[in-house]
Amino acid sequence: MRCYAQAILDSGIPLDNHVVVSGIGCSGRVAGYMKIDSYHTTHGRAIPFAIGLKLANPNLAITVFSGDGDLAAIGGNHLIHAARRNVDISVICVNNFNYGMTGGQLGPTTPFGARTSTTPYGSPEFPFNFPYLLAASGANFVARWTTIHVRHLKRDILYMFGKPGFSFVEVLAPCPVGFGKLNYIAEGLDEMLLYKERCVIADGIPLDELGIDLRADQPIYVGRFVDRDLPPYKPVRLEDIK
Image (cartoon, rainbow, N blue to C red; front, side):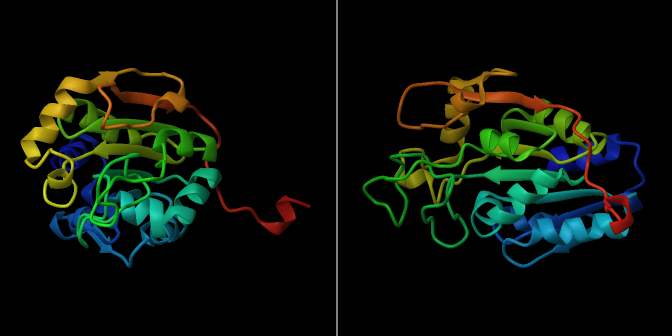
């Protein structure tokens, strides 16, 4: 949240033009802490709410700030279609690999083999690879950082404010109570140290290599993975498509 707040201050965009929209979950409380126009929406509906705001006032710098459960599960359909349309909004997804607020259940980003309260013997499912998914859907900008990469994260949030089209930054974050304690990273600092030891900045690496496996001693790739200039969405009148 501090990276987002600092990026707002450095953006040169008037505070009255910044809007943050959040869904339900641990990171959803961000909307209540920011001294800008903010909207705490229903579960999974942050993106369509943000799209409505953007269509009503295209001059707004709109950021969706929510978690992996809210954005990739109940809100997953909204996520991929907003990217497909290349709607001019920014999305910050705090990924802690589980439903942290409701008891640490399996979610769509839980790594294969990781234990949760609903998969005590390890997840039998492969998770979403967010950068791959969003790139395939049509997003103009896609990056991934962790909570230890604060300078890179703030830089890319600031970059999103000026990037036309759909922009997405995944932020890997600790959840020591819901996820960490079942996966031998019971303290927030333990997961931060894991990221320090295993993260590799690899801008432009092939997207299908960006899956995350916390069990194996292999790199966790972070960086900027997509930066292109496809035309952003704009409303079209019927007479324009005849």
